[in-house]
Image (cartoon, rainbow, N blue to C red; front, top):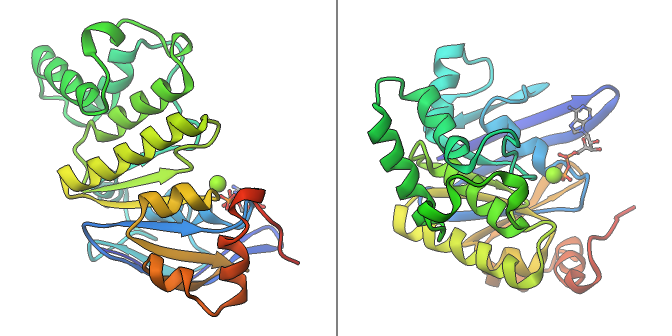
Length: 251
Ligand SMILES: Nc1ncnc2c1ncn2[C@@H]1O[C@H](COP(=O)(O)OP(=O)(O)O)[C@@H](O)[C@H]1O
Ligand SMILES: [Mg+2]
């Protein structure tokens, strides 16, 4: 579904991705593990063409993303929902307008009533009551509710692929669990392909079907939870066993 072929990415004189090879399967959640600053966000930004690789190729559904023209990129971005790390809601817009924003941008032919119906549907999907939240502004919501609204907005264009960048960062453990559960439910109900990145090992194991470990700019392991837990790779072992101590640094 999503393929990285020998992707290198350099920022200035620092090479962050050093030959990433990865095949993300359809209709499952693939989680990418890795230390903070390791290049996880950099990887998923390549999927929607927000970043161009220094070399290598990225394919989504057989379409080459890097070097794609505007029209192709728009096509890809319609297909791929991206939940940014901070939710990225517009503070000056109420919740209804936040969720309606991508719909109005991409489906200009829809009438007011149709847009409203879609907004209500997406808010309900993430467990929010449309009548209660629509007229509120982001600052009036808790962190967990803001994440849900961000998720509703991500669902607005009915993507077949959803990218989650640290969806539980900054949330308390109970809310984190709720969001993780929601990611699983959405994956199942909508049969989407999900990619999740996180440095939180225990949340990630709860959310993912397949796991990939990014280390030193490369994917050094890929497999299911069992394969990861029983991996003989010392880097993988150190990472998954450090979950209670927070993100770790490798020298
Ligand atoms: N647009 C950019 N310009 C320069 N450096 C960047 C840019 N984006 C990310 N980086 C650097 O690349 C490294 C990896 O960042 P990132 O992909 O955000 O890591 P992660 O998501 O794993 O925490 C960091 O050192 C970061 O500072
Ligand atoms: Mg990041």
